[in-house]
Image (cartoon, rainbow, N blue to C red; front, side, top):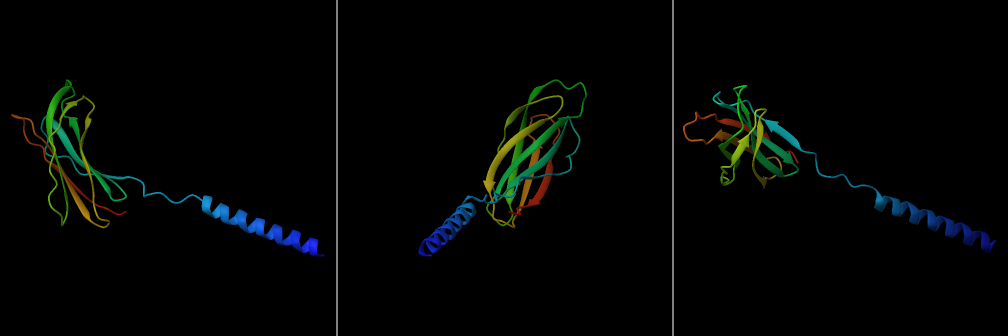
Length: 145
């Protein structure tokens, strides 16, 4: 009888340990997937510009998309300005990249920052090429986390 009790106690202990180990090995949910929000295009010029923000958790990437309006567009280097704001915080320093714009359009990388959950961010994207008409585009999004 003592042997049977010992065997049952050992089996119960092993079952408890196995269950605990499975609980530790269970996957932990990761951060919320990326959410991309792009605004309406800026004023037409040589390029249509669209401001975008990509939010993953509390990480926010500000960038723009530039699409030529002329179907005969030849790839060329163009200057841009990417700016962003977290509403209620100090202004973020804009970047002014020069990017090779292809006929089908090009993503213009700006910068990434963190923002508090629940805050609103505003992105601005524009052509910064001397002699070209301005094509400002703006978008806002909420950092949902």
